[in-house]
Length: 328
Image (cartoon, rainbow, N blue to C red; front, side, top):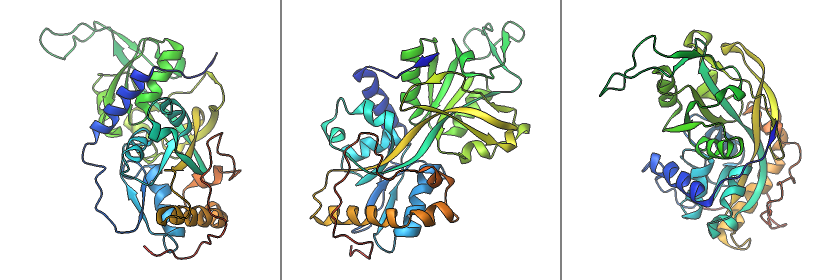
């Protein structure tokens, strides 16, 4: 079964609003005079770690500050509102949102990044569905439902799913295409989503991120969690990739994957901010071997072609810019 993603502008906008509201106040960063503000992601997830790597190899050439967010969808809101200068975003999210906000339509690609994987978590023992509820409570009557064990994505028909960050939009897109009858509950964090799963409020969790995703990799078999296998056939730009999570006994597990891009607002290349963006682009390209071979995120090794921006217009970095220190 193959699929492509479509969703209405109204649904997309609603998801963006919910995504921003979920972390009201978190994206407000202390101003660092002269630094490029890079919209990243939640604390200790892969987006944030990729920006930390950028700071490590290019921070002496270009001052960089990470701006916390819930992920790619929220990053687009921050860029549109001029609360960030650059940001990491999934290709599908960028394409879906380009139909509305003109500030998003004009964003330009600095370089391609790693793939984001859709991690689908479920309970190894299964979840109870169809149980009768005790009146005026959220508790169910034991033994009145059926236990469903979810091991594959195709087994999510009719299920309730907790979605985290940009998985809100992807969940809507998947449901729009597949008509599985999935219903979604928004969770602010991965921990909150897992708590909903363990409390039988949902039967699965959708969370997005590069491999290995720290919030998934820290779980062990003893947690009672399993990673469901993605058993559908995606269409471009989506791909199915196989990855391992050893602590969960998940080997050669299939995931739905989508490319990420580092994007920027359309600054004038001769201007002060455009000059810094150009210097960062140059520095990252020059340091790619170090990023791919050094003690940095494994996602850097997924970058094969620095010029492949998947049809998104590239930021026209000034040819005279060298990767040397840029004054704030």
